[in-house]
Length: 222
Length: 222
DNA sequence: CTAATAGTGTCTCTTAGACATTATCTG
DNA sequence: CAGATAATGTCTAAGAGACACTATTAG
Figure 1 (spheres, helix red, strand yellow):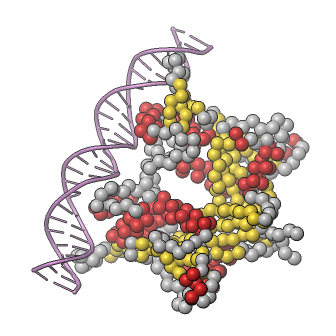
Figure 2: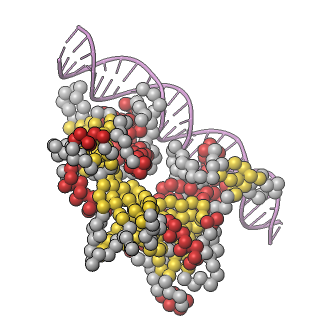
Figure 3: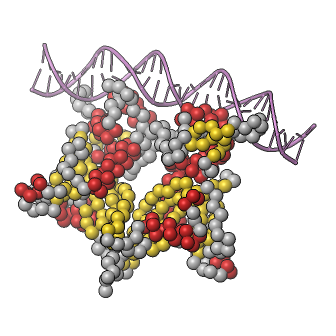
């Protein structure tokens, strides 16, 4: 008997808040009680024939957790893994999503937002994908404007630096960071606050991802 | 009627010789006459159920063109593209292969090695994949030992610099290049030639890909 | 008045990047 | 002996990285 290879797509949806990265996970259970015990996974869907993995995935994200495209600032394909079990192949195409804060549907007990430092039990596969996503985010943070995609379109340089430090795990001297941002010419000021201890705000010059020639440096102290 | 989604894998096999990059392409035709007119493509295979894309692909490469694993220095998954035609999905998983020189089976009129500057007509899809592969190779050349994987395991610094320049399209000052290589500590000398105008040879310290903290610089002149 | 946050300038040291000549081997 | 190739050192300029204080506002 012939079985079609199975195609699955996954989303690694990351968001930033308060010096922490969060990932959105789902659980199959409906009952809240069971959910606390059961296994969480990356949001996923089977890809029906005649559909694209992305289309199918986003439909699922929309219907099961109320994701709106306005919530998503950045999307990127990560990797395709494959496994064979009982002569049956499964392909798993993973995507990274970066969002500003998302408020999921109330009452969606089967959707959870977890800090990446305190994850519930995950399958080996999901953990690998998540790790890979974070590693890629880290790498790109050093040579692109990607951290800005985890912030609202208007942000302060302090916000930007906080995201940068959270993703890379390194602290940067504030003056050097600003000097570098300025020399890269990637942001434009939106408003210079009249209040002297309230931050001026900026926005990205280019709303798409910008790559740098040289990686972003980071200092070792403070 | 249900049709299973189709899964295809492609190989972008690149090799270096004489300051040029070459890609291996195949054509379906058997007759040499027809072959010259017909369309060339990246080596590809349908992935049968119960197999992995990689296993299937390498079996095909071995049987149709005599690829031996010893010829391959480096392999990396590139990207999965998908297309939908008549409600039928096709997924295409692409891989990049880097090799030292390969001599394909004699008499394989349906296998050709083309300099990437003089490609035969290719499908839009194949051109995109090939471009992406070259772009990725270029990017990684700036911050990893990847160019060395296009050379024999033992090579001279001049060889190394030639590959580097060919991939990046930039000329580098020879002294600065050596200085940088030395500071990166990625090679060990194999033999210091006694003849004074024959190059000393080196080999990579780590036979796996090594990433640099900072990208490889390249000079503007010479 | 105290605590927290925003903003800003200079110096040093490392490294990118520019540059020319000599020695040896081959034909 | 002429032409090609390998090897090598120094100077300059740019940028990474270290470092401290003042002004304002909120409580």
